[in-house]
Length: 131
Image 1 (cartoon, rainbow, N blue to C red):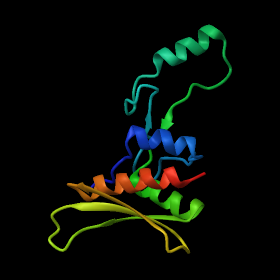
Image 2 (image 1 turned 120 degrees about the horizontal axis):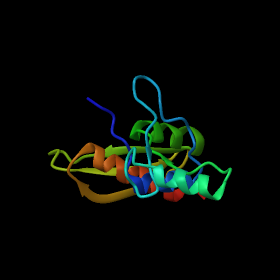
Image 3 (image 1 turned 135 degrees about the vertical axis):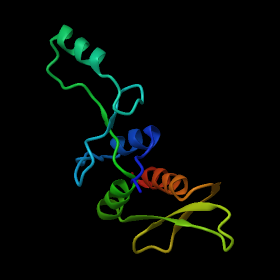
Image 4 (image 1 turned 60 degrees about the vertical axis):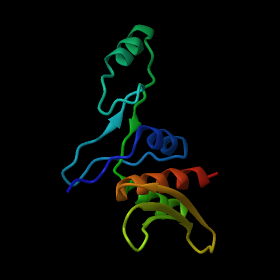
């Protein structure tokens, strides 16, 4: 079983909300998206443009953490807990977000076929709650 990486859309929002944790360790490598949303995509053109402009700023990539790493960051840094609900017959999954210490829940009632898809929805909704 392999831990799922977050989508490009979720990664962009996570970066915007301040996620900048290392995305490597325990046997997995540092994962990133390039500016076009390609996982471990070619950044040659970005490097060439940087050298041509004599730009000293590093070119930007977008961290692609695992769902569990982003879930932990949301819980520890922003008191947002993401989890997945399912009906009694396990026919679909829904993502749920709750702010720790609050009775307010954000439930995304969009049916997802897999646990990972539902968790991705919950992660994205959590990031939207960060101001």
